[in-house]
Length: 192
Length: 244
Image (cartoon, rainbow over all chains, first blue to last red; front, side, top):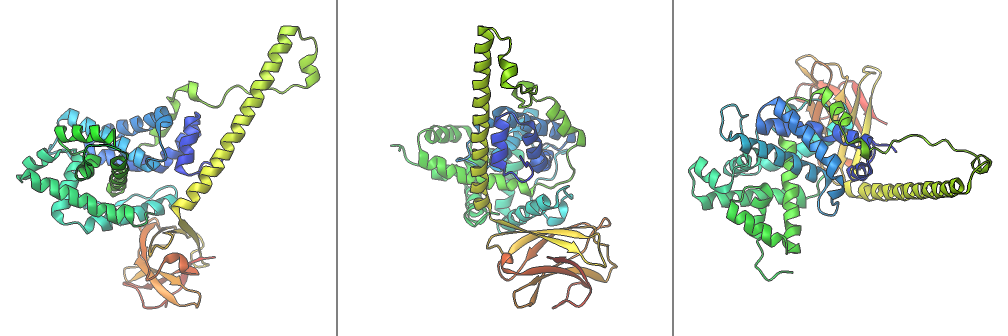
């Protein structure tokens, strides 16, 4: 079995069979993204490490629950990672703490990323990153703002309304419009 | 199908996890009985997943983390086990009592079953690989260093029908302040169009977004030359990288 050329879904099938090498390959592909998403969300490396560990444990234990017809592997994995990070953030009750990283999307520049051990993987990630960056850039700043508060801080509609001192309906509309626009740009146009 | 009205307007926020409790509960209850809304939700979940790529990569995870995870996996799920020493039929038969013989036959049936299961898994893997190969539609081109930059190498990836791609370059010599590298997209007539201008860091590495006027896969070849800072309308300097 050539793990490096296997598609994500094939790796999940192998993990379901108890193949640790398949998990190792999936780790190589996604650990950096998971770790940095966690780091951006919770703001400290020790917790980001703990989240990364939890995510891959969960994949090992729950691979049998993955349904390919419902989501891509990367979607499933990102959902586990983000939920875990937001849970921790909520438990700490750290919303708005000064220690948190700046909550916006300005980081998403092509230069802001470390080199990967695998140039092809780095190029693929760069391609997706560029698509996301370009899509976010096409949103009004007000929509990007609520999107960041929901995505990185896990704030609800009413919490965002309170934080931004805006009517609840305005926040709801901004979130909905942002997501609808991203849907067109990132999903309905051919994704890489 | 469901008799209750669809909750389309709630789905973007549900995928993002920002609905307040009462709305989230209403959405959850509806999603449990509505295939159409569940399918719609999956699209928005994909949007949220893509946002992961916008998180800044400030540091790699600690090197030891991977091994720590692998070391602590539940060993009962490991596929590797004690190796089986295969004996000849005569070995198996000689000196066996009736219960031993029955045990031996059972073991053979189990081994056959395992082989069959592995074969089916292999077939499944092949099918999945073919299925995914047709879904992702990514083209990859390797670029190798010329005689003036023999250590340099690069990989260019591009989605099918996409006018944007990404180039990752390694071991290309850093240039002085008045020069830059330029990627050329070369069509079947030999015409060259710029795919982007870039510099490399001190280690010779760069990740570059590539954009062309038409789908990148339609170009016949790719090359990188040294040009004045800002780039040139056509190649003027020495070639440092080229595709086969």
